[in-house]
Image 1 (cartoon, rainbow, N blue to C red):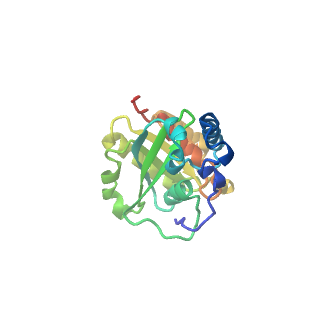
Image 2: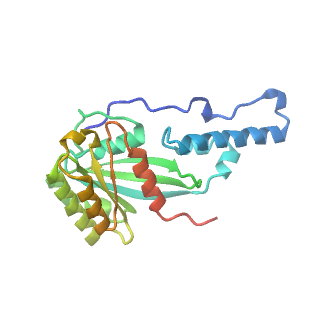
Image 3: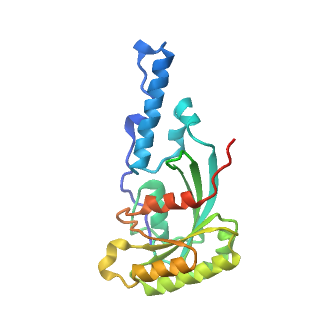
Length: 241
């Protein structure tokens, strides 16, 4: 399943700099007020999910930077059958792109993305997107051992992919890191008319295995940002410096 062509990512335009007003440049109170308004505007964008919050925007001004806690990095792995849309989910989250024609993942691919939560915690995901083909299954432990979170993906139109997802859940339970955050994701929710796996069955399975469950569509971007935000909320918070 491929996903590399573009759906243009939304830009924040003029929000990447603090507006400068030469007539009041010497007024420190005015400059501080401008900076605070700048940070508040960015926070508004984040809360409404207009685009994933990326680290460069957090470094635009000292006031904005100081309003954010130190960055916490987490390794995250995606597991699932070939063709369920793992790469599509990652690329939609990281680049705002979707392309059903790109090639399947060989081995594994690596991408990263940084986002900020409403409490100003900054989380950097180091994302390993693993290949779903059987011949690469033996390599998967290299990526999920030590990972803080795992996204197990299936295709809602494919019962076989749901069975494979359950296999990966068992592998994570046996060999994953203690306390790993596990997520069950039913992808291709836009193909609901062809659904073969009920959301109720998936929800019940997730609850029995201490996972949280969400359905997504990488094609329409439905629930993609929410997926990663929910993972970030469940990860350990950085200690206060």
